[in-house]
Length: 417
Image (cartoon, rainbow, N blue to C red; front, side):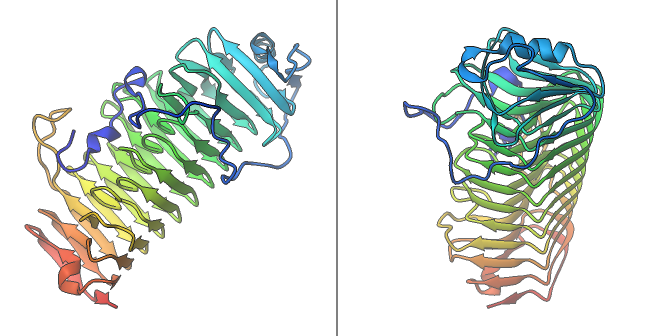
């Protein structure tokens, strides 16, 4: 673990090693989470439509419909739709369902529920070009360690109006939502939009040992809630992410050693216009030589409740901008820095990280509402950057900024109320 952030928790070591760290679970059925938004609207269809009911599925919630789904998918070709009418489908999967390249796997948003009990490491596998899933609820239905959607090498994969439910409130075994990079190589143009990912372990991640490079990821209009580790994990020490856009999404209620957005070994990342609320640790964590990262126009409330920060920047990152955000730390009682930039790591930590401070960090035009337990901005050992034009309520300016050991930092036009 990194000494400053449990931040190595942002580095997933592989599917089987990622059991939830949230502790024991109560007995009983999975939580319905009725306060969380679910997708709606008309179903999508294109090309020849293969209805799973025509292949023998019942949708009665009791009969095992796995064989019917496999038949419908096997009969579809590029440009076709495999359609799941409204209903609850019980699927016991001896092996993952495979979505053929170019096929749309679609249901009635909010009404087509797949309650899946995989007997393998994943429920559904996707690889190839121009695949899409829309309007389906994918829910783990048994105490099995699994990934709901495992993604190999893809180009132009669209995931829309989905609900991914892991039931980690019931079972201690891990259940991840989306795993990227399982085939290595380079993937491009992945879109996740208008979806709900809740009660999972990791919402989306790529395992540490994957050499995959993922270029062009957009996450838009999604809700992430009550997951037991990081919601969006853009981190893969053996691979990388390039050109990531996370915007207009909601992240909430994460009492775990994870983050809303974890960023490592990444270049060109934007996190903008998101709402992040009630996180034990950081909402946004940037580490391990990531570059050109912008955290802009977000509203973060009650994050870093136990330790570290709302936004933490460590370990050799460069050109990180935190601009135009609203940080509400009035509920914080732990002594944290709201925006915290420092070296982090140690040579004996996982990956053998040397201690390298961030460079070129800019914190500008933000609104800080602080309790008297926090510091608004801390730069420890940072080389190059600025803290300019921020508005700080609840602290005197001398108490709001901590620039210990920082060099070449411009500080100007910050104000207190």
